Amino acid sequence: MHRVVITGAGTINALAHDVKGTLEAFREGRCGIGALDIRDVERLSIRIGGQVADWDPEAHFNRQQITLYDRFTQFTLLAAREAITQSGLDFDGRLGYEAGVVLGTAGGGLTTSDENYRAVYEEGKNRVHPLVVPRLMNNAATSHVSMAWNLKGPSFTVATACASSNHAMGQAFQMIRSGMTKVMVTGGSEAMLCFGGIKAWEGLRVMSRDACRPFSANRNGMVQGEGAGVFVFEEYEHARARGAEILAEVVGFAMTSDAGDIVMPSMQGAARAISGALRDGRINGDEVGYINAHGTGTAANDKTECAAVADVFGHHADNLMISSTKSMHGHLIGGTGAVELLACIMALRDGIIAPTIGYEEFDPECALDVVPNAAREARVDVVLSNAFAFGGLNAVLALRKV
Image 1: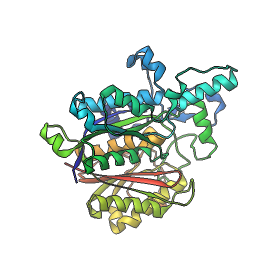
Image 2: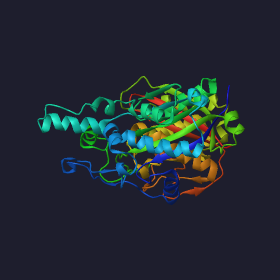
Image 3: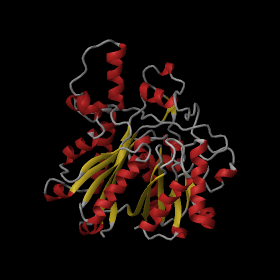
């Protein structure tokens, strides 16, 4: 089995348009959630979100590309550019055949769908743009990344709601570890902050009107975000031979299904995914120092996740640091695990643990060290990244310091 390392990272989200700015925001405990600036926002009950500010597609793409790229694809391409540039890889030769793309998304081109439903049903138009389908399909971002960088290996998109990015990165990890590929561009993206996207989520009655406060007793729901996180996963010997900078090593992955309720999480399903990632990475529980939690800020998710952590780690759970960066950038749904992986890398490389901001009241059902409100300096050698999705689909990644 081949070792797998991360040699490039890129992002755009509500906190910043790059990795450096995002990590600075994590260190400062800065909140990127604010009032939404979208069409017909006055018709919504939920009017806040982790929206990407100052986004100008024309600064990054020409007019023809903008016609072809939905907002989620634009975000993905920008993050991929940053990650691949950092990696220093060139895919024009043989390596292009040994490298692929696997990305996660839940909504895909939802902005395109929303715009064209409005045109047909509200404005009464009888035609839509001929590129609507290529824009809205969930694999659009994957396809455009493969074309932009000549990636001719295995390429596909994973859609498992809020666990999409973790599932995608887990597949990338397994393909390199098995020897199928040398390099995979992986992560996820989402752009659901449009009228139809927010209105649909309002119906679930799990959204907060004011703030995301994971693990706090007065939490009142999740807050949506948007953006992308993209990474270059690479076979270790390949990276070492070319003298690449290694950000972290991916050592374990597990996925489980609750096979229970379509929206209510299961402690047992989450616990099996966490313990499975430990087994896969040959990690002793007491080696883990930090967990980036799914931590949505809903009553059901937070207490269930804390119970799962306590079940798996026993007494060591009291020594763990666990935080939810969704409190800062919002819940990117299918793209969320990718942005959150940046906090895991920061913990390993810089010894800085991103906080759970907005924490106000202790909850006895979330009685773990949730790193409230302020970042913390701490040396950690092994971290986990949790993702637990609607539909009971769970995916956990384990990373180790190199």
